[in-house]
Length: 310
Figure 1 (cartoon, rainbow, N blue to C red):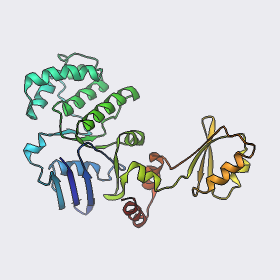
Figure 2: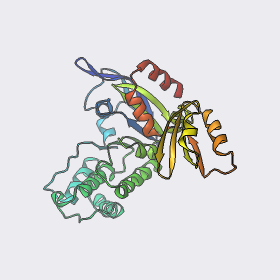
Figure 3: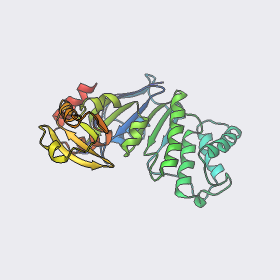
Figure 4: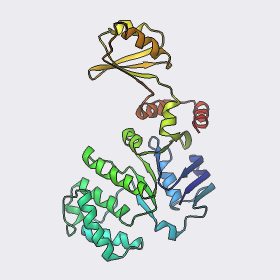
């Protein structure tokens, strides 16, 4: 079951929230949707779910409209969490499971397994209001996935979670993907995006400025980052044409260069005595790319890069 978004546009008054958006999410794939606050991510999710209508373009699931029946096959985790605080965990989960067509007895059995896998501290009979914030978040995550949806929409699923619990949820998203679910999620932590995403789409002011696989997007910026461990002083490195910055990083240094070929000269200089402690040349990280593009004002150049990656 494939989600297709074709030339979709949405505005609110004079403000264009999403403009000419194109996206394809196939079964067994994860699409990372990134952008600063107000970029158009939540608007996109709401249009997919028919909470609001697009002004132009089409959104289809398996080449047809997203009907109420299809919505039962979708798992949606909104950024604004919405659990009923005075209900028990079990009543809460069973209620949401039944809304998605799941039998109550089946949901009760699956809930026990889910709580064990996610290491939820608490019992099914506990009221939601007695849970910690992290455990309540896990319960909402369970409510989103317990009916084994064919399509997952996850808006900031890891907010407020520590690295251990983030890993637990990340593994469950991968499990759903491996079972054939199509997944689209947004996250502000680029490390999580890079670990999970097969494809990536970045919005800025409603415009698509990056679209492609994570590998292709990073490669399009060239191998312009070097991690170096060497006794060679900064003064000898900084005079090399094309070296833009040198910063301490752990026991080594991070060097930003203008183009990949500069790396050859740096390597030759540090390897002149025949030994290099560490030298790694790679493209910018996804976090660096996000920061660069968020600060970039030339929309024409960004659109050209997006087309080039595709």
